[in-house]
Image 1: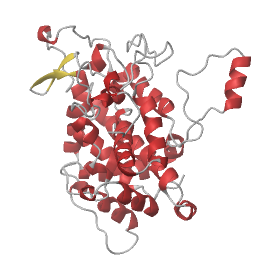
Image 2: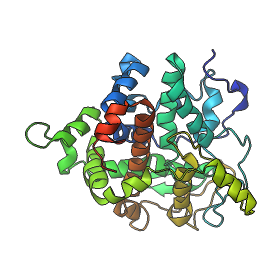
Image 3: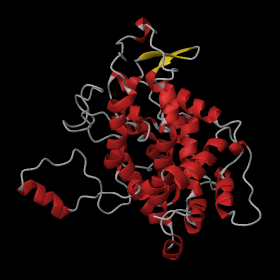
Length: 357
């Protein structure tokens, strides 16, 4: 198989770390799907297999589904990145001291590589690259994929509801499901009206959904989040502060440290810039000072609850899950529209269909 030039034997996963759970990844992809240009949607239809229904949400979890198979095990390390000496909340060192080995095989490089392949490759390679890109842009918005401390929080025992679980799983699944359940009885529980006057936005949303349990939350994220509380922040979210070659030379002359990872100057993605902001959440909120890990999961003591007003309640109040998923989806849409959309569509609709930047 000649899909990629990466060495199959180089990556071995030490412990499961799955990024968002299935719902988180599919919601991220659904947000992207809603904001694709018409020409981008056509391009995606030509790239993905017929059984995908031309919908990114239907392939968003594929990289997790195959990562333990013999053919795809080389991709396991590409779902996360670990900074040397990173130890939230006491030490927030996102790459400032380098990256844990293999230092070049991580999600930041993977996003750059997959973006290039979606832009320029063909056939199966382009198909699989699009699936990986969709998934990896979800991964960097789940903050526990951005630290190696206790294997990304997998070995931090906590209680959530009736479950004995780990910090990583709480953010993968439990908090996401809690947010989904919070809107199950709301006005967003049913499909939006798509006929009548001024309902183009509703049609965009419903065309991307497929009757899943997370559909109500996606509706909320778009109509009350992207179109409402975060509307003035979207341009900042989707703008990359890319470093030019001239900037890098100036930094060297001034004796300034180079960034831990150089985001590309010729692609519409800046994974380090985006992931750095996600990583900051670990020290600011997610990894409380009383959350300690264990070296042996068999010796775990479960005594700290996270389904409390002070923790889960604040996640809901601040819409932390919703915001991270919105960011991931919009950034994916912008990247795909930039490299796959027609110039005519870009002039007519901008780089995010339905959103003014």
